[in-house]
Image (cartoon, rainbow, N blue to C red; front, side, top):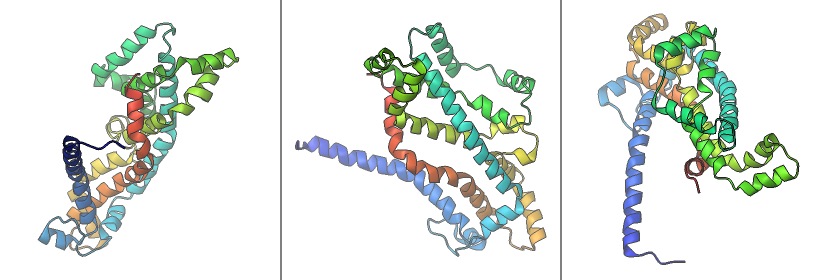
Length: 292
């Protein structure tokens, strides 16, 4: 084992300190949100925000679900969009990325140029809206799934990964009589597990946080995803709290704690899933972004 120099030790200490500081800037605000959502409203108004709940109670969560009946339905809608949209998106992107990594593909340069071009320039909101409406997807879940199937950024990572694979692996399979589809399915894809996990996280987060397309194309409130419901709750929060409090006979309005409870409810599913895929995350990004 090589002995580290004094400069390397100083660098490691500085690096750990800096990364810890950056981590705390992300973790502490969320811990404050969770703590506030589990605190008593009067305590929060009197003492402010704290890292440890004061006057522990789950009343804010109970109030959030009672005051917004569509909240649970919206969560189920978002889960359904994840279950359907993410596998479809990954299938489209990995097949397209594999095809674009083949330099003998007709129109290879043109297709790659168009893919990169869309990362810098877009058609605009009005053409996008007219296209989705013209395809008959208005007020349909497909308006939230189909436009999200393709991501130029993800496709660049996937293409670079497949482009960097040893050509001998595929050539051996083709010599043995395998088709390109069999080579993709049995050789190329099994070696891309870290990248699959990474693209999966990207697709899940994108799908879960997609409120803008829902605002444009979904008019039925029962089809709202969770993030659009969260947005609507915050816009109409004061009126919503007042009406719900009057119905439930609450004299102290849980303004701050209920807001934080809604944030926790909306973000918790992604936070639960992410740690299980984290070990693949950095490795997958590097595999897709660096060509050897």
